Image (tube, rainbow, N blue to C red):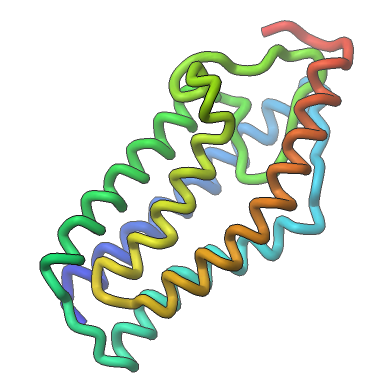
Length: 179
């Protein structure tokens, strides 16, 4: 395994930890304004899947001796970086309303700035997750990890998006603070 790939996966792991710090801060903000958490049952599965992605990237490359293939690896690296950019654009656009859990504040209107102004792309953060989940393993040829993550993530996203749509509908129709 290339040492730079190990560093890349570790940096993505650090980025996930940074997301958790932001999410905890934002959860305090939302809960202080009457926020409600939806879909707690699927959240541990999501954490396990994302942790498994990082572990799978490293384990598959090491155990199956996956080589770095430049024709695949470099474009996948570009996609990983683009996915990170999209993810942080989403986090910035949502501000204190972004969270790793489905947590909404009643009475707030939907966010319509940043990538959320694109009405045809209702869940841009999940696009970032899907792209990263396929591309990060493929940077170093871990195609099994990419395939398994993609299938499991698709199933989880069905549950997650339904949960989020229910939560957003509830929040928009509740009286509450206007920010």
